[in-house]
Amino acid sequence: MVTVTSATPTKPTLFPLVPCGSGTGEMITLGCLATGFTPSSLTFSWNKNGAALPDFIQYPSGQKDNLFTGVSQVRVRTQDWEARETFQCAVTHVAGNGAIDIVKDIAPIFKLPTLKVLTSSDEEIEASFSCFARDFSPKEHEIKWLKDEKEKFNKLYEIQTPSYEKKTDNGTILYSAASFLTVQSSELTEGVTKFTCEFTGKDGSSVNASVTYKQTQPPVGTGCPEADVDIKIIGPTMEDLFLKKKGIVKCQVKVNRPSVERVMWEDKDGNNMIEVQDATKGSKDTIELPLDITYEEWSKGLTRFCIVEHSNLIDPLKKAYERRIEGPTQRPSVFMLPPVEHTKSETVILTCYVKDFFPKDVLVSWLVDDEPADFPYDFNTTDPIENNGLYSVYGQLSLSIDQWKKNDVVYNCVVHHESVVNTTKAIVRSIGYRTFEKTNLVNLNMNVPETCKIQ
Image 1 (spheres, rainbow, N blue to C red):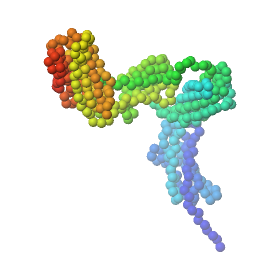
Image 2: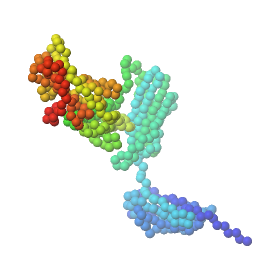
Image 3: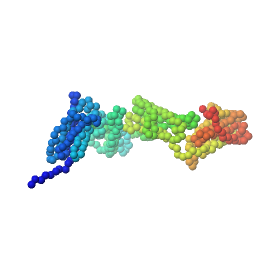
Image 4: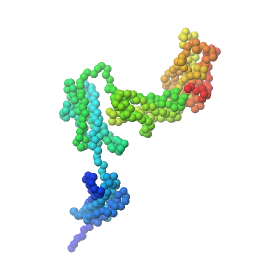
């Protein structure tokens, strides 16, 4: 009696076969290996970018341990292979079809990083060292520390960051990483101790950078180490916003250590709005990058980010200018306070009290006979004072007693605020010596025509 068994059909697994190196002829051979399938019947096919390639060879299947292996080869143009065209090997089999794409691999880029080593310490307890490895490839690497050229020494902490990936303009992927070392003060030899950060890439090439640590007694009053850059955001003036309907936000960058590579403004979605590159060119300087905004943008609330890229920093610094809308506007009450009577002072002070408004942004200006107050007049406005969610300010105009006693002169306090900018444009309160003598206070609320607005 003869027993016939039938194996369960098994789907093939595909592997690409590619040439080593670039070759020198006009044609090269690609292969496709199908393994681990049964039954033996298998059909290969090839295509390039979806177009069939009929001129290929399929070899008979070979058997081992009840499973079969098949091989197919195709000749393709070398220039297509070098151009990274996509070739596909496909198989048809009773247990399931399969396909595999064959594309020339990009040769790995081996690039050593730029190393930057920094140190800081509390000499009585410990010392810390930072090593920043910037723009290397490939990702695999090793960073180790040496003390006075020796690898073995007592470490309190050693921390390495994950690699940070970035894509350059030409598509190259580069990586950056950092290592942080902390040692006890007992590891610092008297005098000078040398700490070296050594970076080794995947191909075995290496680069190092060192810092020498000298034990000294820090001067009394020494504070935190100076930052590489300081960023200051200067908001728009109320005069520009209320009178010109536009303003300028400035990003002021003080460069303490060269070099700043780029300063730019981004919106809240990360879109680049304006930038300046290579601003300091290796020197210490102050960079100021202005950004125009409109009154409409400002009044609706906006967020802008100043981004600073520095050669010593892995990640760029970011600082925001933000104007939030946190509630409905509240119209101010405005009062003109008369000067003190019977004073012996040669100076008269007129006070404009602007009360209970929201938000806190306000402009208080002065007119003398409908002209902007200028020299020899002196005026100022206090910072807003908050009380129960509402704000108040005092605006003061200083003038001589002789100027005040001119009967035909009228002094106007003009208040600009969001709550009135689309209605009366401004709130005006007026006073003069003649009216002051008769009524002690003149309190008028009037519209300011466009032709009379302060320039």
